[in-house]
Length: 245
Image (cartoon, rainbow, N blue to C red):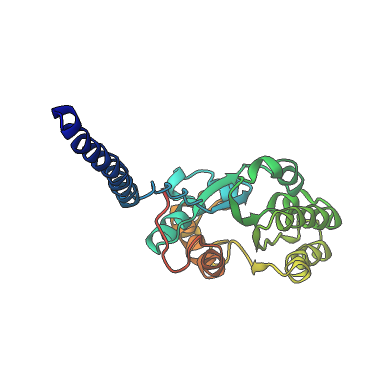
């Protein structure tokens, strides 16, 4: 037997072993690659930003805070109280001095923030001073409430009173507008925005019409029991509230 003949069986055996080892190596590599890929955790999607509910205080100079610093108006004081109570809401002061209910209605769409969840409606005082027909006041306020409710916004209606300069019947009819609308639309009613403030020199500016800083503190305290349940109901997370930014 020649050396070549003796080498051929050995060479065949080596080739056979090599072919057997190759699939095993590939299988081992595949297993290791699979184990590595399974150990990687999928990327976590960022948490969606939480929408801060907005309260829009809509009205005239009594809401705007005519004659006092911006942080002394009742919307600003309500914002501070909501923050201290750990409600997430942001309060926007949408009061404009001199506005009647018709003026408020005209600018309603622009005043309602996209994230508005609550509307404090405090309009009508200038209507009463000007003797605007009660039917027109009722219609304007009705339309404002209907539009707000159509957007899913909760309404707090603030009642107004007017002196009998246009007759006692006018004052009585004016008074009835607010409880009537509250009952019709099933909205919360603060019976009179200036309760305990009107007529008190210590709580009013020299014009005896507009509250001073102390008067606005009284208004904010008076409005809170009517507003707070609505804030609770419209919080983004009632169990884990966050402070407004």
